[in-house]
Image (cartoon, rainbow, N blue to C red; front, side, top):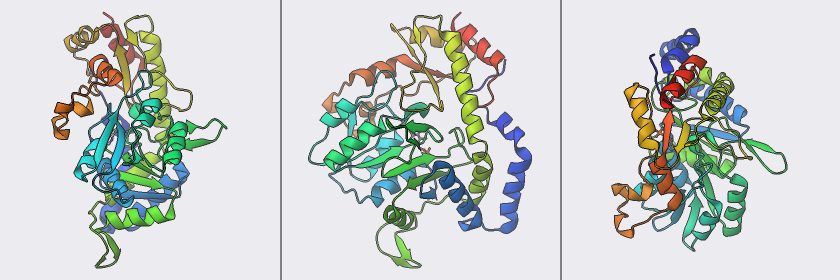
Length: 370
Ligand SMILES: *Cc1c(COP(=O)(O)O)cnc(C)c1O
């Protein structure tokens, strides 16, 4: 059986006519940079997310960097991030000369732990970057409260969670990435809303921040050829925006397909006492960017061996805690965050995408449990 972690080919073939036409229309218009197609996608995504401003940029990493620059964060400022995430979240913090403060995550939903986060706050702390890992929101209500008590900015890393709902205690629902001061996402092809190259976007409800974000992403330019501060050049190109505008219409359908596949996996692995299926917290919907399983009792290598033998694609997101990445130069500190260490040694992810069939899933789990 031919299996892939992500099946972009079959997803594309279902909407090929629409995508191809959208791309050809951009080529025909020769409006490759900015222009009406980018504007249309930004407006449609803003309407979908119910957020005031969506600003396209070149990728998710740039989105995080531009967000931090727009907030005026300065060298020496401490930014709190979960230690169990993709490197990009903390990389831009390092790049800007800010200090990443890495804290432990929950063992159940893999997201930043609220009690530990609060203890990590010092008088240098300026911002928190919750990551909605694998498609499920972090506890934003608690994070907003802590941020407001300590006067901190909240930048959401929603690269894996676009389309997921956050449910407040009073029943209010907001989309992932629209809850903090700024939200960031990525349109990397394998993300839940993926383009056919690189792309990213920044969300905010603040008019003032939106102006700053646009200026920073455009060479710090306030009006043409007047540059008020050092910025960057980060744009979402029109061909990618045209593709995304088509795919946005299918995002809810894609999320439903992922959820259905996750429920099926849950059922199929439930009989094995060493495997823990992904936990669902009660304040977020889960859009399953990844389907990530915990293998208890040091059993991961045995399961991975079965997958390898049967040529079933799989991956470990993430094998190394952020603070053990050489890039951050923190080896001497000898950090050891209990849950982060445990998860890096115990989790693995199996194929998750919008085109999975029951027979493929059955086959994968049959081999996994063999
Ligand atoms: C993918 C990802 C990013 C970076 O996005 P790029 O578009 O690849 O730059 C940042 N944070 C997280 C959590 C991601 O998964």
